[in-house]
View 1 (tube, rainbow, N blue to C red):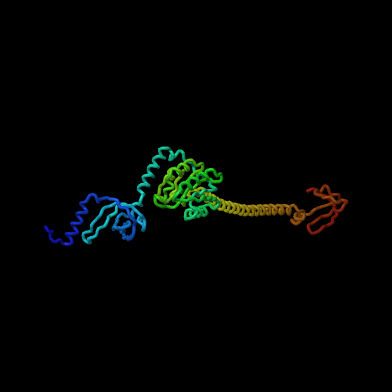
View 2: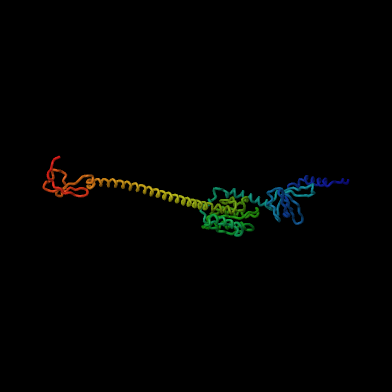
Length: 373
């Protein structure tokens, strides 16, 4: 029996119902290469392709926006959705990861569980990071931004710190062997105070060299303290758990190792500044005290001189009062006979002349008689 004629909406709705009803198509995984990315504020549109076919995809999960890159081979999880109004079929993605990442993550968890049970993560076995760091051994690629960032931070915070770079691969074939050997070599190098194992961020596959048992055991056996600075702050690797300290980034590792020195430098500068200020204040106080003492001394000396001048004036007046001429000026006269002072009438010899002294001259007299008064 032939089907009746359908409208476009009826047709599209029927197809959508078929897709929605098919349980086998819900939450399935599809592997393909990303191309044709287009982003809006709330959604990202892209296509997945293999050698012969392609499908249209859409995702409304903002966390996936940074994962999707042109040319990446990824595994997406989601369900098909038939858009009735436009008559288009899209695969709605609610999860995406680089192809093979799921297997890598399982390997990571298994290795982590194994080494944790053996005690490689125990906090009581971790070495203290030294406070007075003179030489840092850095295990990383000789190229790239990592070593530049570490140099930059150390030169800014403490130029006296030496950086000894041990260049290795940071990903790819045999990278873990090179990293483990670098750790073993620097472990026996006396001039190294601390080791930093560093690299920039990346996918789990990019960081896989730092998730191997070889690197983990070399890190645990190392005689030197080790700081792990692998990837970004959100990246975690096995070496992060085994190392003596995890830094969120290579730059942060350099900040940590120069923190104590920078703090001491700041303390010294503050102490020097305080000493200079205190010295200036002490000198100023001394000058003020000396000035005050000088003024007091001059004042006391002036008072002393005035007292002495007054005393001398009194003595002068006293001496003036004792001066015979001063007495003679008051109407008195001095009587002498034969060169001796005569102060009694009975002592006068009538046969000898008298010298009568006034303040302005002398009179010679001849005594005639002496009478008692």
